Length: 178
Image 1: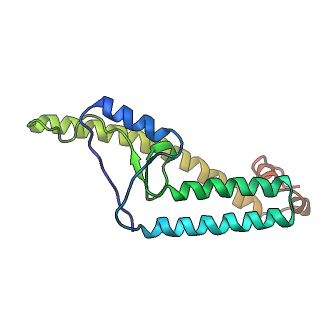
Image 2: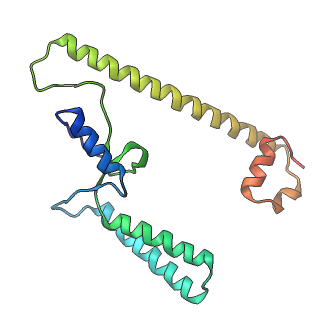
């Protein structure tokens, strides 16, 4: 189930203040009167991962297991914060995203239809530009995927079995099937 929260701020200064606070650290924590099931599940999962990482580190202490413990601790502390306001760059599913609309969609003062129409046109133009940018990236990645699929279907040398996944994909992309 997807949901969306929208907060209207009166002025740019308030927005800048909220965005600045949301961009620092793990965002702005929101207190909720009700339990949120997906957050409870995330807390439980991250706690299980942390316990597993600590157990691995006790059995076989090394830099890799210590790194896993650090990552698990970070994930667990982030989950413990619960519902948060995050900037678009750091956003994740289910959290409140702090983003700026172009102009006021529905300002507090009475507005004429022309003002609302211009505001909507500006937002549509920005959304269209963002869509075009993301579409170009998607099309480029789909093209790479089609090329890799063709090369894999045409036969792959056994030398690829000795390469890491990243090395194998780079070699296939560069046209080296030996």
